[in-house]
Structures are given as C-alpha cells and as structure tokens.
Image (cartoon, rainbow, N blue to C red):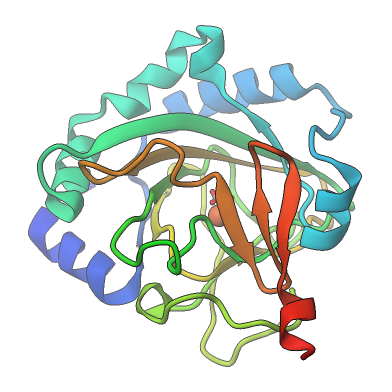
Length: 243
Ligand SMILES: O=C(O)CCC(=O)C(=O)O
Ligand SMILES: [Fe+2]
C-alpha cells in the first residue's frame, strides 16, 4: 500500500461519515484472525441476544470480545501505528480504544437493520467510531454487504420507517480481506442478509477523549431504541409516531 495521507483521509471521513481503505492489513494476519474467529464460533453458534431484540431489530449477529479472553493476537491491529495515526488525525489527541468485537453471522441470517450505534439525541457531539476489519471477502455469494448513507452522521437521529428500506442515496460496500472501514457511530448503516457461508467482521471501536465508555449502550433503530446493558427495548419509535 502506498503511503497514507492521514489529513486527507480524515477530511474524507468527516465529509462522508465513513472511509474505506482497501488492502490496509496484511493478508497473513487476516488469515490468522479468520482462523481464530471460526475456531471460536464453530459451525453453529447460539445467539446471545434476547428473542425480542432479534425479532424487533431484524439483527442476527453474535458478538465475541477476544481481547477480553486474553486472545493476544488481536492486539496487533489495535497497536498498528498507521491505524493509530489515522484515528488520531480523525479524532484528535486523547482518543481511546473501547474494545475489539468480532461479529459472526451464519448463512440464512438477517444481517443488521438500519441503525446508529449511539444516540445523537442524547448528545450530538458524543459518538463512537467503528474501525472495521474484514478478515475475509464479502462476496455476492455470501451477501452481508455493509450499507451506509453518506453524510448521515450530520442528519441527527435516523428517521422512523421500514427497518430494511433501500435508500436512494445509500452506498453498498463489499469489503475484501484486509480492508479497513471507518464508520462514525451516527452514520446510518445496515448489513444485508447473509445468503451463503458465513460472515465475519471485527470492530476495533474507539471514541474521542471524554466520551463515556457506555456510549454504545443505547443503539437507535428505525423502529426502536435498544439498550444492551438491560437487554431491553427502551422506546418503541413506531408507537410514538402513531399518535
Ligand atoms: O459488520 C459490519 O460491516 C458493520 C457492523 C456494525 O454495524 C457495527 O460494527 O457497528
Ligand atoms: Fe453498527
């Protein structure tokens, strides 16, 4: 990969609310991660979320936090100097790494409905940033493309409506092995259904200095606000709009 211009990339991130850099990570490292992830999940992992969440959010993703279990191999991406420099160019001094979360979806699962990882209504200036690492290609056969709406990180809370609506201004990302995708937590995003094999992505979440660690506890979908700490729907947005 050619030398990176961090300032240009940071400008692009702030303009669009996301940034894609192909061939960012070493393929051997990606292969190692993919193997560890597949070994961890096995072929048919159980879901960890409540039935209500799975049903309402149209989301079927199983998380794993490898660093919390002492799987040190996952430190390599966190410590990557280029990733650190790029994150600093975007977020400024004092930003911090929240956690590394691997996400696994089996064939025949729904992916993820449109959402924002944290709530702009809570505080429009507070947010997380997803640093997504793809350890295997997202192919047409597998499905599970990541959809984003450019510039939506400046549009406040995601509108109420169909949880899987096709937006005319959405962009479809099909990241390949070794691709880095940076995504602002307020940017509207979605993952298409997984139609073949299985889908894996790994998120090195981070946030600016001073952001509370629980920033992603409440996630905003088009139909609800969901709190992970209590595994509960804290607001039915469809009901609120019915009156
Ligand atoms: O796996 C992806 O491509 C996106 C996952 C996502 O929504 C997130 O990490 O917040
Ligand atoms: Fe997300």
